[in-house]
Amino acid sequence: MTVLFYLLALVATVATFLCITERHPVHAVVYLVTSFFSLAVIFYLLGAPLVAAFEVIIYAGAIMVLFLFSIMMIRPEVTEIDLHPGFRDWWPALLLGGILLAALGYTIFSQPLRQGTVSPGEIREFARLLFQKYGVAVEIVSLQLLFALVGAHYLGGRRR
Image 1: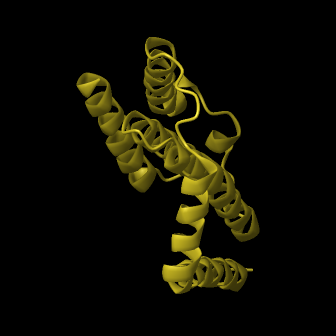
Image 2 (image 1 turned 60 degrees about the vertical axis):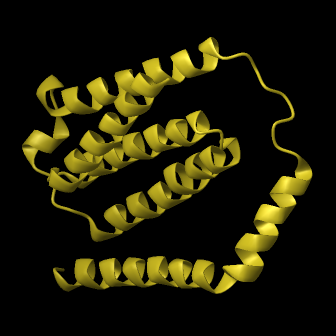
């Protein structure tokens, strides 16, 4: 399990680095989704399936939809190279995705299924802690995302 943990940490690190250095915004989003999924598997390996599910649902789902919506709103210029990406453009994402799928398959099939690991009381306590103690922080983060979206719309509209 330790080797799998470090392999997934390497995938998350490389995917995040490729996301930061990628010039094409849609490719950057694909790398970021790969990083989020590898983090979700890491959380699952650490015994936090609820946090892993939140990672997939909130970050890999909702936040990525927000990023893609922002990219579509900005309308980056499409070049001829962007219309027909070759294998050279996608091999890092394919390699990292393959490693991630292999690690996920190994994790799922090597461990017996644990049923009832999370009780409804634990979820209720987590929600209570999140929205009572850290409710202001959750709202501030959501406002920051809204401001980032409005800023992206403003910056994208200035070029027209």
